[in-house]
Length: 390
Image 1 (spheres, rainbow, N blue to C red):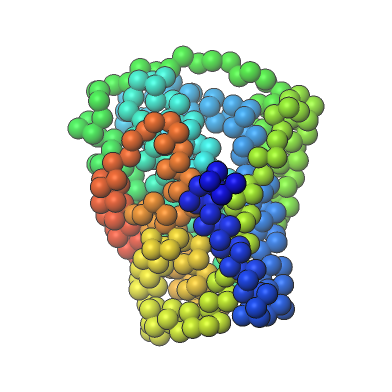
Image 2: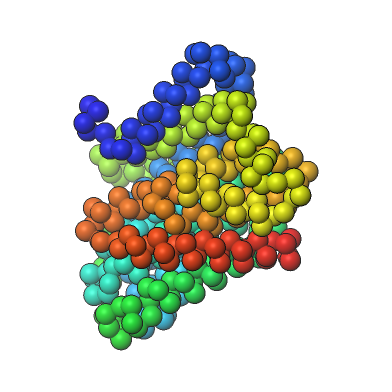
């Protein structure tokens, strides 16, 4: 069994085992463990529901249809296709979570490449960079946002009101980097691309149900429904349609077991480490003067070193709830910054696996250097927008 597990799977299992060991040995008191798991419960419900919704939406060919129609709408013009792709990836990230963009939109975009006879790498980089940098606007956009929303003390609309300017700034910087390093004429093959042929969807009923489920999720968010309730209601519609039309395509692998194990382990390990010296280190790193730029930089640096989820939670623990600006700046660092190392965010790890399965070669040196530039400039510009317009 262990031979069948990948390195990432072993890390997830190891994290959970370590967390359970901390509870068993008393390093993490039982009451603290229960409090931590009670906090993570609604997040896990949301995570399962949104991944199931996104997986079945992909199965219903909703993403494929949109991607193909974007390429047709672009009419062979790379600049037009670039803007359409960035809008699509940003929209999916904002409303359906960054993991949806990394896991489900990436294969769709890579499948579009041979149809339109265009290079796959620009499409792949568009999805992964915007999966991270476009995940600031709503609590559902990134699990780090959901981790921090209670302490920050804002509902979805108030959160968006604080983060709209930072979100625009991070997307703008990302688009500039994408165009210069991957999309401009010198970085692709041809002057124009070939628009693909539109193909009918296999099952119109499933397509309609999945589209309705996604729209319902967005509407429920706008009327301030809890994210777990909104995602569950939307997923229920799509699951019901598949039960009636294609029951054989419903399988246990739709449930993101790996993410559940990872997040549960994380919620046991980080509180233990925080209680045994980690808080002191984090306080020293971010300083006592309340500088949002320094806080964001620390968040981005730790995210690229150890992954953005533990990085966010470790630093958040030492920022008082009243210091809302620094909490939001930390989100900027842990959302926009994790674009350098392959392990900086779970979305990036999953994206690399998707690229490998589709035989898309990612030049590692280029990935690291361009990601470092995007992280530095993107985080600085986004924090500036937060300070100026927040």
